Amino acid sequence: MILGIDTSCDDTSAAVVVDGKSVLSNVVHSQVEIHHAYGGVVPELASREHIKNIMVVVEESFLRAGIGMNDLDGIAVTVGPGLVGALLVGLYYVKGLAYVCDIPVAAVNHLEGHILSIFLEERTPPFPFVALTVSGGHTSIYHVEDYGRYTLMGQTLDDAAGEAFDKVAKISGLGYPGGIAIEKMALDGKNDKIKFPRAYLTKESLDFSFSGLKTAVALYMKKWHDGQAKEGEITLADIAASFQESVVDVLVHKVMIARRKMGVKAVVMAGGVACNKRLRERLSEVAGGEGVEVYYPRPEYCTDNGAMIAAAGYHCLLRGETADMSLDVRSKFPIQELWIDD
Amino acid sequence: MKEESFTCRTSSGEETINLGLRLGSLLNEGDIVALAGDLGSGKTWFTKGVALGLEISSDTVITSPSFSLMNEYQGRCALFHIDVYRLKNVSDFLDAGLDEYLYGNGVTVMEWADRWPEVLPEGSIKVQFVILDERSREITLSGCHPKVLGMLKQIREEAE
Image (tube, rainbow over all chains, first blue to last red; front, side, top):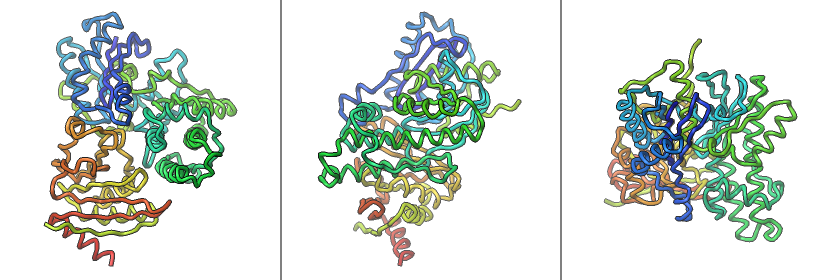
């Protein structure tokens, strides 16, 4: 039984997971409601918040799992990549708890957590597979050969897809969180009304670029407000739907190129943007046409959470990778550095 | 001290990167570059140039730190790329420990730095971005510290 803790960005989260797959509890001190109250994209995401939250969140995870700290076999904690101040809160809490309980600690890479979040589900992909992690901070494609063996195939060169959603939502006055606001608004719009750019870069490139799209929408919104863009004919919903379609097109196109290149039959999509229904729909459609299976974790495992960290940590501990008390956080932590040789 | 400035127009992302590179090559540990301008005005592109000027490998991808708040890179000295877009007020900035980078061992580039000018040390180089049209940007570098005036002079001379 493993406790997983993540404090790499805004959320303080803790979860209790058995054998790296059965989730007994998964508690996220989400600050989305706080953001909403201020009506902007403005979290109170200080390290201080993590300090305030962490004991409460861990105790709640024990309570919901119906266990005590003496039932734990190990603790998994995110050591990077992320903000040093935020990561340190999680790490030092874990060091103290592990010392008291005399149990091993696994140092987890946050990105590996996202990739392995799919193993918290009943339906899991066979290795090897291609994974797309897509969130506010990341848009990356990985080739996953096994636990601990990940190769980065492509990534965003500027903005992450989730960031594009949030910034476009802000430009359009649609509120926060931007991903949900745009998805909701897009339901009432036509996604082919405006042809926003698709940044495919070169034909075979697996890298992404969303900053040009963000700028294109900003310029379009300006024209739209000035009444130059056939106002009356084009609605805000059309803009939202057309923008969303542009992001979805590129994500689906590139992950399928990666899939063909590696010749795998399974595609995993994780991270906050993986909750987007239009993206799921399109990916399933395209993958289905090629006889490829698509796997998504449920939304609570898509956003940052402790359960995925526990899942990744479980495999570290199985391999005998335990960290000692000198363990430190890493603001930069490329996933390739995890590579496990035979 | 009197503030001086240098203004130029760029007509592509590449030109914006080039201007960043020219500034970046003049920067050293402890220097702070304060970027301001609308969404999509070229702040992150400019930072890609600063990174090249700091001899950070061109294989290293400089991505937006809007969500992570800070991305760190290593070249001939460290680059701390900060973005305060998501933060609500100065106390968020301080609570996240971001002020420590301003006095850290590296060059700091901060996006949306005009929101709280009071946190910026005196020797900061201000860079203002204005969107002219789809591709063109007007970029103004300014400052009043003698060190900054020296950099502006060099950039101006190179441009002529």
